[in-house]
Length: 91
Image 1: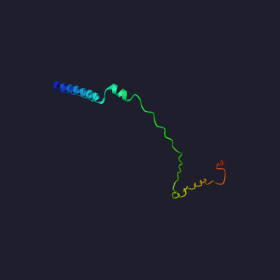
Image 2: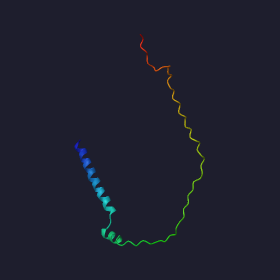
Image 3: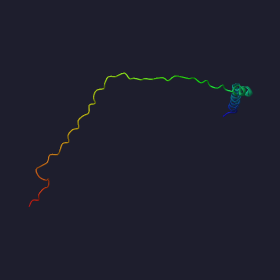
Image 4: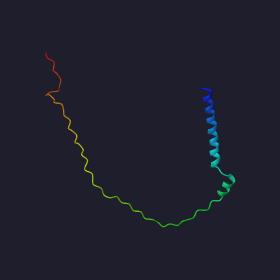
């Protein structure tokens, strides 16, 4: 980087810190005045209420059609020859 760029970055950093401190100083107030204002909060007022009844209902919707479940296909048994399936030795 060139020295001119470094000087510009340094000036920008100083200005940014100065702006941050200025904004932080504006947000606060006198701590003594704030402490006196927040020292004694008022007691909350008690309110008596009656019991409430709540009822809920659901409008009837159109019924869904019955679920169509496919029937399982019967398993095909292999065609069996007459016999045990063993070959008798010849001879």
